[in-house]
Image: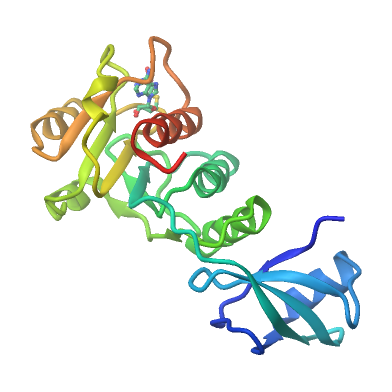
Length: 237
Ligand code: SAH
């Protein structure tokens, strides 16, 4: 049986004991039916993965004991995903998939045609944690607060290249090759980018416009396709 994996906020080391929150205790003992002496995998997003044993199990809490390190921390490439939030379930999907695909940071951005005014950052972060637990990751990408795209672009770090997914383009996959270093991917909202956003992006030195094929993809599909394309050309696959 594959072991349960649990993300904890406390930093881990061999021999370290870890107190469980109420939710974690409910998940381990109520949902997964683990008990005293059972073991599982824990990771903290910073020091790798450990095998841990359950030392105390209660309804509202419990204690784990880290036994041995089972995996080193594996950082994803220095790749951010910027996307315009869409409907709730599709936004959740984007965060989950970006974590699985190996994004280092997830940044919701408000574009001119973005339909969402606000996001629940904590809920999206919890989705990233769950995805990392499920996919065997040892790192959890940070989900940033929703920020306006124009401000994000005004403060853009010059050394970070920006793969701007532009459905008005054909080809251009070659634009990615050979350019290692920090990157970000930008995917627009259902309504696409406005003309002024597109002009601004095209003029940015750091930006590279990239096509994802001749069909118009939904924003959630585009996020997964863009991460796949980037990972296969420049990433850790
Ligand atoms: N403007 C479009 C829909 C935008 S699709 C319309 O309504 O007709 C949402 C986002 O996905 C786009 O802003 C773009 O970033 C990305 N996208 C979708 N299909 C794409 C493609 N074929 N190539 C590059 N980017 C694409």
